Image (cartoon, rainbow, N blue to C red):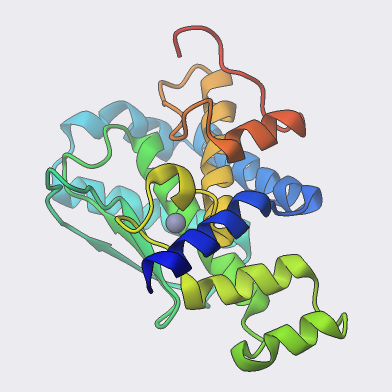
Length: 233
Ligand SMILES: [Zn+2]
């Protein structure tokens, strides 16, 4: 994609926001996931012991968590799950990824990637949410999406989410701020914000990923879906 295209698309994404009901649906996913973590003795154990876990133990924990996320998001059987190990570099640290081609969620279990069990869960939720929105819009053909929008068959939100996969802006084309404003990323990043806020309120030590001046973050505050974190968090 040319620089001019990146600029145009970035400007469109800055103006675009998912619908309130969509953010509420995502909030529901995040809270259900949080409740499962907080009440299941296996996960309380993982949260406590995570810093001392070796790769096999991190792998086992991730394999135990994924079915819970899969069930919460209603992805059952549609999205495959694979852990992987990739060293972070000075330039980037890949936490996880969702591959729409293979419908696979992947999480990086390198020891320097997720400082806490809750952060690893947050990544799984993020990638799983990509899977949900990919699945929800997969029936819309790319090449006729604009016609479906014009005829009112699909909403603007559906159009933006579906076509986002064609024009996906990944770092380093854009920084984290603009990256989080891509239609798919608004869904995935807001799920992490909702989860982090819920866990912080329950006393977990987890930092929200987006800074306070992030436009998505501000939008969620304006909708009263998240509140400003207490001083020093
Ligand atoms: Zn993402």
